[in-house]
Length: 372
Image (cartoon, rainbow, N blue to C red; front, top):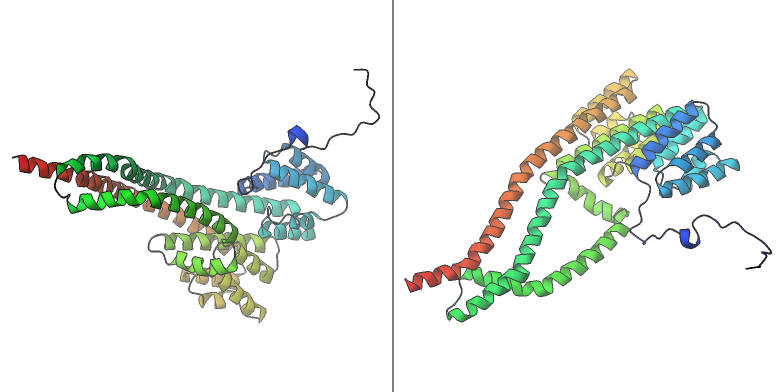
């Protein structure tokens, strides 16, 4: 066009048409699997002699998670200006868990950063496997339950009104089950919108407040007392506590700091509160096992094995054995739970749908008996 530019400035990445569009509350953050892969790769490269800056640059370029890539680029810039990697990780505490930050700090201080990262990777990989086991076991029952609820709503909203119009010309009263079904169908016109709006509102509220101390103090104790799932949730929390505590001790993190961190990462307020009391007793010079025995949330086997580990100087080994045992217990319990829930849900679905069909056909049966 015959126009000469006066100045040219390079556009920063992620602006203009290249800007990523994210909906607040729905954007995907940094997952545990992403952190496990990053830790494993980082440990391998540092152990092979690559410099920390070059390692971070490679990880920022090759990671598939875009949020993690942006964070690693910022960490690389921080390290380049003289900030330690643990301090830079701490700036992104919403993406890097406390256990990772403190184990990296211990690895930096002790000169075994690659070993600390390998421990982090192994810990996260087992946590991902545990979550995967639970999700895969609960997928089928949840789908069946959702399908049954959708089927009931469809019948109440669309099918029952058709039968109601047919019954109006019968000239006689409807049976009680049919009347209940018709009244439920009328109520669904108002109940469904209220449930949808209430469910969406509760979802946003829960996402914002589920980690608050007040909500956790009220909800977490109830979780552990649930009839069937309480035992499973307790085993998951104990397995997570044992695995994290073993890794923290192996990385050289001080006991009191490790107790605080594993309490925060246990995923249950009851265990976190119990470990606060344990840490206070340890601060006064007591052993770990002594105050643990007074906390009912920890099974006797756990406290006894920790006591033996303390006496023998092999606490890390004992904690890893406890974690392995409870990982297997969780896997076995989820399998048994799934096999027990499947027939119960199928029977529930059959009773609900079958009962609705019978209630719809009762007036027809009564007409046939009158004609005879």
